Length: 295
Image (cartoon, rainbow, N blue to C red; front, top):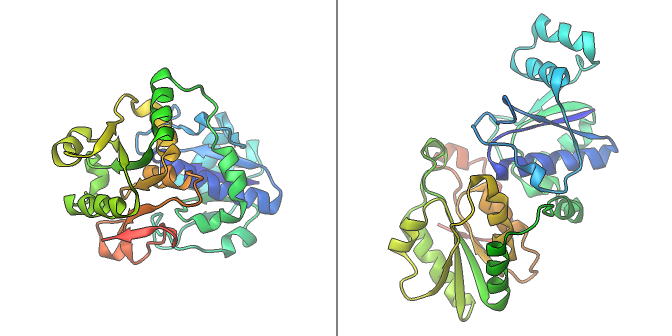
């Protein structure tokens, strides 16, 4: 049995799923998803959002879910009793990232050595699933219908030389880990994009649209995307992926918006450093080599 924990925001959930999907395909075993937390909420108070996609996997529920959560949190006799009474999970190894869950270094041995385990981590590296890219893209197709406003924006994107720009600034709890990107990062990235793409229209996404309006895009063609709320975040990601090119922040959400863009000639500009802490950046390996690192 393969069990993957699902936690964090939408971008992290997608990395966790894609990692688990690869292991399930490699070992020809069913994928099971364990949503961490109560009432469908993840441990960072962000709701489960993979149900917006055409994913393949069984969500653990009820006593089954409780048993695995006990095994992850405390182990010992209490968890063993629950497991023995209901499910034969007591011998499942728990596989975590080395160092901490934000270690992004690829470890290919995990795919081959563990066909029967609980995987608890973020697995933020496309090398885990790049060889099943077509499967992952199909799984992340949206299953809900587009709103009229989204359709309107999609039509604008397809009619123009479109560049998605994503700003991430307001998650103060997460900024202790990631840090806010300086204004200079966006200034340089927008300049680099203008050198590569003619007659650009920027499509602006993020959690601080007002800051973007005040500091950028004074003379450019620009469309601000601010009508979708957090519950509809996947719709913003979809619109980002429709754009020809992307300028992303240090955010797994915007990472996926760029990765899902199927334009073979796309330009993606990313921050060189993902984390605020230099030690964590030593374990950074989330940016594909074909993307441009700025910073």
